[in-house]
Length: 330
Ligand SMILES: NC(=O)c1ccc[n+]([C@@H]2O[C@H](COP(=O)([O-])OP(=O)(O)OC[C@H]3O[C@@H](n4cnc5c(N)ncnc54)[C@H](OP(=O)(O)O)[C@@H]3O)[C@@H](O)[C@H]2O)c1
Image (cartoon, rainbow, N blue to C red; front, top):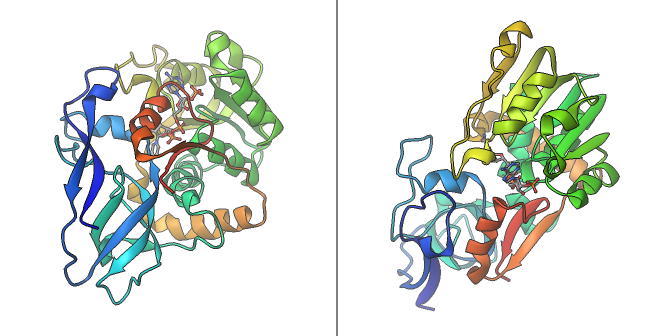
């Protein structure tokens, strides 16, 4: 094979991205050099953080280049190899997503066990989103036995794992928020949340009344959710600031009640999962064993084919996913 398809960013989105900000192109595949492998991608990840990389601003990751392949988590199978350590047939995790094939150095891929769990799990529950939930609850919010925990964006990739991990770490009560009745029902009926609120049905601050006070808030949303959480936090509560998706396309005002952080003696701490690689071992052992034992529920919303990658990404901001949004190229 000599050519493959990839998706490129053609211009920097203003506000909400549209399909016109991307294009699909055919490109030539280079010959393999020594130590390189050709990977056929089977599953691509689309994630909210990618919106931030579309802006030309300094951040913890560099912006996406225009007219070059987008990047992101992906799982694939090695089809050709000039590496002694990564043979043909190996299932690998890497960052050359948004494309059908990638030529990568052996150091740019990590072999994963696709026998024990489906390969796509390494993009979700056993991947970066799952690790994010683990880091946020253990290292950042330090969930303790008996805590009352609120998770926003609770039916998404990170949130759905976070709620279940919180429970297993000893939380006495776990409350979630999500944007539809179906999602709220999934949280309570299948994931074991004690309660869940549908923020589309009225102000989140009002809906949370009676569910707190919260010792821990795992924030995936920011905006009105963060403000509502501050209102309903217990004294000395800990807030893990993981994401702020309500403001990714168009910034939203900060919480108007931030001064309550003083009177309640709150700790608000932001974090980036990639700073906490040292926790990955604990995470894989603990969450991997819960998963293998069938003690964790996870779900994927799957789009089929490279041509639906942009649609999958755009769907994240509209809540089109329950659990992890995955693009299946098989
Ligand atoms: N700090 C880190 O290292 C790190 C790592 C990974 C992810 N994150 C952050 O964690 C959050 C969750 O990421 P994810 O990958 O798990 O995505 P996700 O939750 O699977 O998908 C995004 C979800 O956000 C919700 N949403 C979209 N717009 C919203 C709004 N205006 N208000 C409330 N909810 C809204 C939607 O669900 P509804 O239907 O419920 O609205 C949607 O399904 C994101 O903010 C992401 O940036 C941070």
